[in-house]
Length: 300
Image (cartoon, rainbow, N blue to C red; front, side, top):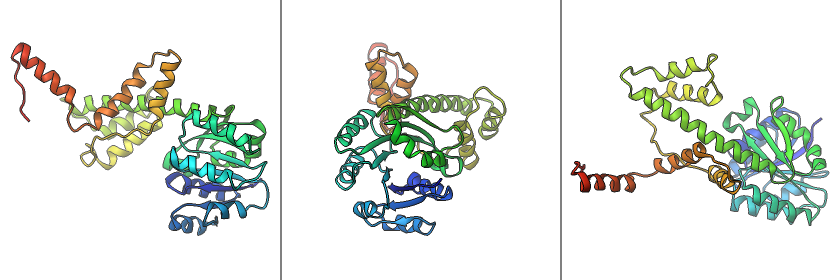
């Protein structure tokens, strides 16, 4: 059964989510700061809105508004603005990569206004339109069940789970992303050893091979195959790896819980290293070897 739902934020994921919901027979009200993004989804059947106030006005019944904007201040402001416009019994869903502690706080603040809050950890990236989104959802059971038609449409079979109370959805997604850091770093190191070996194997063929029944097969490895197909030695890519926060929060949770997580921690630190044009620590190492042993140094 279709439901009425709004999507706020029509970026790479938000726009595709609108399309998947429309394909599933839902009525979607769409808003973005960019009028062109609104026009693009209106062409596909969405109901466009020019402001958050207009989003709220276009609903004909209890409201469910999915916020899909960058985590941090943009999400905070959007939720605060919506809270001032919505009514008791309405629901706000945060599908971004918010910190789980912020989600717990927001839930308490919205409960005071009798507005339900759902934190929906969402994984699937730009492939979600085709393959569906893995949804890790936290919040009140009754509120989650009211939004179940949308969750079911967005997720592939068995790709939705109500994992617990408010905050648990984003906490689960945080750990998911921390694991992702470690997996990516493992593949990265392995392929570099292959690339620098005397055998000079075809990395596209190796990644394809490993996806045929190997114990290391995965969707990430399929994406590696795709990347090597486009650029066999990744000559067109700079090795600069950003992080969006979840890896840091995962390590902080490990520290808070006294859980040893060396692989995930080092994977995060390697991202930091990737963003240095030159490592000062490496300079110190070179200088010390020169000082105590007279080892040669390369001048800059």
